[in-house]
Length: 180
Ligand SMILES: CC(C)(COP(=O)(O)OP(=O)(O)OC[C@H]1O[C@@H](n2cnc3c(N)ncnc32)[C@H](O)[C@@H]1OP(=O)(O)O)[C@@H](O)C(=O)NCCC(=O)NCCS
Image (tube, rainbow, N blue to C red; front, side):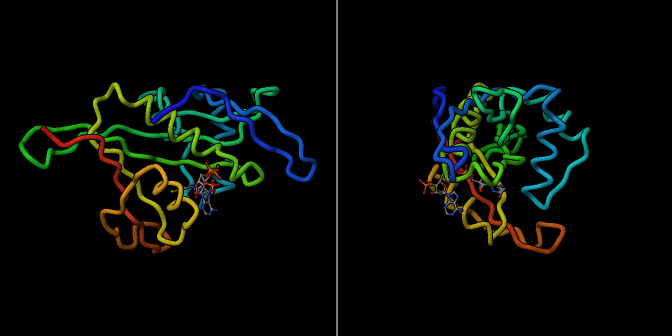
């Protein structure tokens, strides 16, 4: 599921220049930049305290992708939360990972950055003994849907009018193992 290796990506496509990207845990000082990327790349905006609370509770899976030569230059992020949910088989509560948000700045896309963020963050959550990793994605967000399918996520249903603007979401799930 995960790799700790840096990835090399072409960050300035017109100049054919290549740079190393690395993925690390997000810090408090990064939150404003993460919020800026979110506001630029996604219609869903969150208040600062929301990012802070995810960072406080699930730091291990709140990751940022940076330029190796300029670690303050953040080009993408991912954040998750862990939720308790009833088991399908008994009354026990089990943990599931819920993807809160992922985005990569436009000029750095299609070079594996989101894949690196996704694989490393999913791996970082394994100590919670998760059964499922779940997410919602706009039904028209074909690129993101392809990304999740590539990772083995399956569509389990549609959440009608999930987004503020009325768009439906696919509910996608990656199951690690059966409930016990
Ligand atoms: C979705 C997003 C995070 C993907 O980031 P990325 O770094 O470009 O993704 P990757 O390079 O790791 O892509 C991995 C694979 O996902 C699929 N994929 C990603 N973007 C795609 C696109 N626009 N169209 C089709 N397939 C796409 C491809 O299979 C790709 O592999 P390939 O490039 O070898 O064909 C990025 O487009 C983004 O930030 N979008 C705006 C924010 C967003 O929609 N977030 C998801 C909310 S649910």
